[in-house]
Image 1 (cartoon, rainbow, N blue to C red):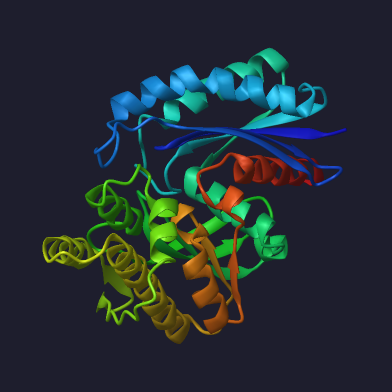
Image 2: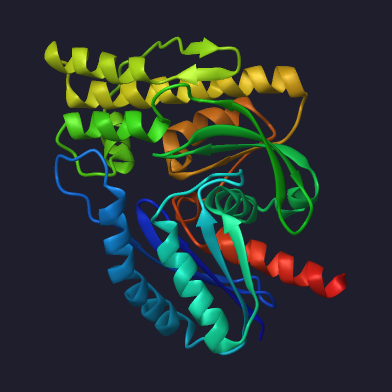
Length: 317
């Protein structure tokens, strides 16, 4: 049995995963970072503290689920948010330090990737499109901290990425979480907002604010505040917010496909686990692929997959 361990200490989730290269099975263990009620996010100093406290528990839970770590041949970790120079967040140092210790103690290779690369790899695996890891495609990474579209060229052992569109102000997840906090819902608010939105039968027409292939989300937050002040129902506000975000992502996709041609489009990140968005976008584009919810939110699974590919590539080379 050959296994690869992945670790990810991103802004809102502590996670570890084991990938069995023989069976193709991935076992995951995760813990959300605690965010105080009514707050719209978490400070990096608090994130580092919570990751430090949670990561041993997450790894212990993974060991129990997997029946131990025997057969582990390599460890991978997300060491930065994105695969660009200067990309840095303190929370990733917790996972990186732990991975280095495990690599030394277990005498196994260590591979480092970006959190964004992990999201893309997890989405490819979950959607059954790992074949795209050797091709060119468009990848959306839509979360609380990122709303970006990338032109991705896969090498089989990693990704070459070019930023081709983004949000110019708020990120999609920020707009959703802020609307949820307005309505007194827990943070992160995506799943709670979706439940409310499904109870609203009103039709909502929202024209996105676009600048070329880029979008703007701050107007969504302002509109939600105005709706709340006017006494709109929580269900209506929830549906408005999700529809506005969805229409913006669709407008970005339309513009990018028009510019770059009919490429496959992979949607990754916690926001894209939303069932309402997946249903609408899937019906619009034949070449659209999504991760299952457990592979959409922050996770170490993609890091484990990339590490396995990297190790395999080194052996062949």
